Image (cartoon, rainbow, N blue to C red; front, side, top):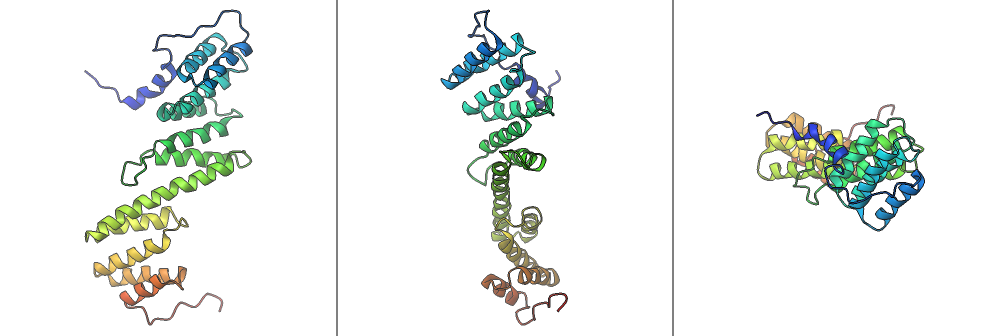
Amino acid sequence: MRKWPLLLLFPALVMTAGACQKKSFKFSGDETDEQAIDKCMKLSEKKKFQEAVECLEIFKSRFPDSTYALDAELNIADAYFRKKDWVLAAETYNLFTRLHPTSEKLDYAYYRAGLSYEKQLPKGIDRDLSSMNQAEENFAMVFRRFPASPYAEMAKAKYDEVRGRGAKKDMYVGKFYFKNGQYRAAIPRFLEVLQEYPGLGYDEEALERTALAFHKLGEKEKAQGAAQLMREKFPDSKKTQKVLKKVGLASAPAPTPAGN
């Protein structure tokens, strides 16, 4: 029997999650769309999130052409978010961005999707951080595509915060390899920090570890190259002086800036 990948089925599951359960909510039958959406929102305000989702799903079916229809889709995602069902929240926000790419509330959907993925990140950096990339992508969509959005500044701050976790993860793994004498495996991790996460506070240590790892491997030219770069970027650092001495560059003069 053929097994279908779960991820291919998941968007459909998100859309039909409410339909697969017995509906406990019913409208009286004579409400306007405004009155109906108001009933759904009151359920959410009372923290009856599952009932709110059911209500909103029924609302979408009953009032497909309502001016509140798009709001209902986001309200479903919000209910999942407030319920702390981060997986369904993220998928529902992202589904909104795919179905309504011209919506005026696209910035909000991307921002909340980013938050939902961020909430899925484990506290320990030694754990699986697979949702980190999705969080980064959604936050980046906000401040890059919608720089004037009220969510842009918060999205950029969250983006940097999540990327900091990525840098910290690579440093953690790199130092683990370094500590255990696996210098060849450690170097790519430190280079990843320098190339993908510059300016997040790990550059100096990443350069230091790179230089020392090459030194341990007996690759003098590469060790000195990393140490030289460290001197250019962190000339007054005590770590720089120690590394320069270690790789045999302590007495070499610093490069003269171009134009002098």
